[in-house]
Amino acid sequence: MGIRIYGHPFSSFTWKALIAAYERDVSFEFCMVDSDHPENLARMSELSPTGQFPALVDGDRQVTQSNSVIEYLDRFGSATPMIPDDRDAALDARMLAYVFDSYVSVPMQHIVGEALRPKGQQDQGRVAEFKAKLDKSYAWLSRRPGAGWANGYSFSIADCAAAPALFYADWVHPIPSGTLKSYRTRLLDRPSVARAVDEARPYRAFFPLGAPDRD
Ligand SMILES: N[C@@H](CCC(=O)N[C@@H](CS)C(=O)NCC(=O)O)C(=O)O
Image 1 (spheres, rainbow, N blue to C red):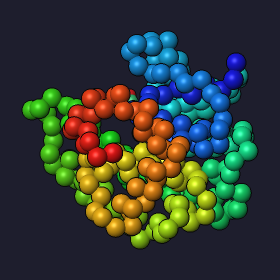
Image 2: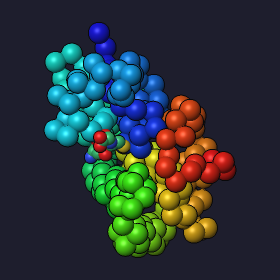
Image 3: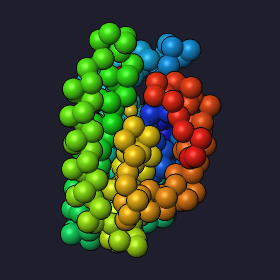
């Protein structure tokens, strides 16, 4: 039966799993979670406590949470693992993945979430708070990536998390030019990331704040 990845091509957390699978050339069947595929929606609600994607199924093994899906994919393929073998590099990679998830993707999701509410119910104060969080994250992260990848070693789980986080965060609250913005550009040039971006293009109309043409 092989590996199945449940998710949606426009979903930032799904991108993380897809980028890892593309990096390591792991074959899988993509199971689209949307209203056109009610069977996948139903399966997704069993696979994760909140029904949030991505999730991976491989025989009896069920994995929820994007970082755990990435870690599972490291068992297959022969390319550099997304969790580095070196303990210090692994710690940095996991730590930065959590930073990109919690302090970039999550505020970005909240800003998009506000825009999805009916006009009279949108809370601009909350939007300002989440933008202020992004500013702090941008400042902190700007002091980290140099010429290489996020953890300073090889392309890793940190970069899988950074790519969608910075891609969409820049849409909701532009990243100032500098090292972080250059890192975003470098990520978008990576073939695994470019593939995820391209696969998501047909869904850009779903973006409630208007998708910019530049990416
Ligand atoms: N901590 C989770 C976050 C997953 C998440 O936020 N998924 C979003 C898509 S990017 C989702 O499922 N949204 C649909 C929903 O909340 O119903 C992970 O790392 O997998």
